[in-house]
Length: 197
Image 1 (cartoon, rainbow, N blue to C red):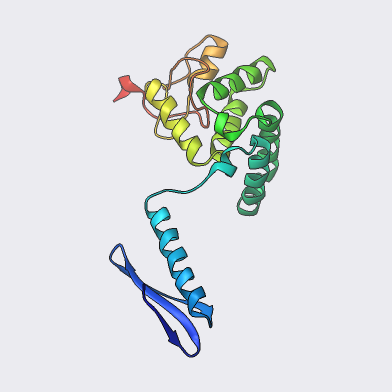
Image 2: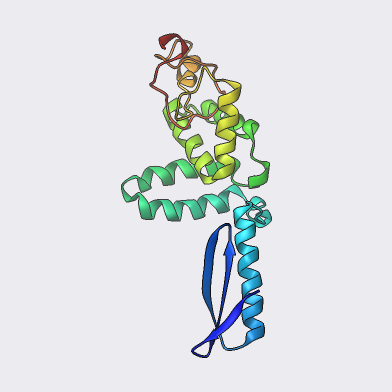
C-alpha cells in the first residue's frame, strides 16, 4: 500500500502487471485513499483475469437487452435504423421473454423454424439471427463459433449460412451449401466452399 499526500489531496501508486498506476483519490482523508487504492487494485485484478460479476446481465430478458442494443445501434448506424428496428421487433416478439442465460443453439434454430413457418424470407431470417447474436455480445460470439464448429461446411469466415435458402426451396444455394436451419444465419456466405479450395 502506497498512499501519499500532494497539495492536500491523497494519491496512491502501485505497480500492476508491470505498469505503474498513479491516480488521485480526490480525497483529503487517508482512510478513504487507502480504501480507494484497494478498490482500484481489485478492479484491475478482476478485469485482468476476466472475473466479472455478470449475473444481473445474464438474467435480463432478450427484450431488455435488445432495447439497449438498439439505442446504441441507431446512434452509430442511423441509415439502417429502420431495418434494425424491424429485425429486432421480430426477435423480441418470438424470443423476447427468454432470459439471456437461456439462449442457446436450439433457441436460434427454433427462431429460424418459426420465422420460416411465417413465410419470412431466408435473407431476413439471416439478418434477424445476426441481430440476435450481436445483442448477446460475447455469448453470441460463443454461439456463432459453436454452430460453425458443428457444421463447418456451412459456414464461412463471417459465420453465415447460405444453405437455408436452398434447403427451404429444395435446391442448391450457390457455393455455400449446408443443412437448412443449422447455425448462425447472420449473413449469406458467398465465399468458396470446401470443394472450391
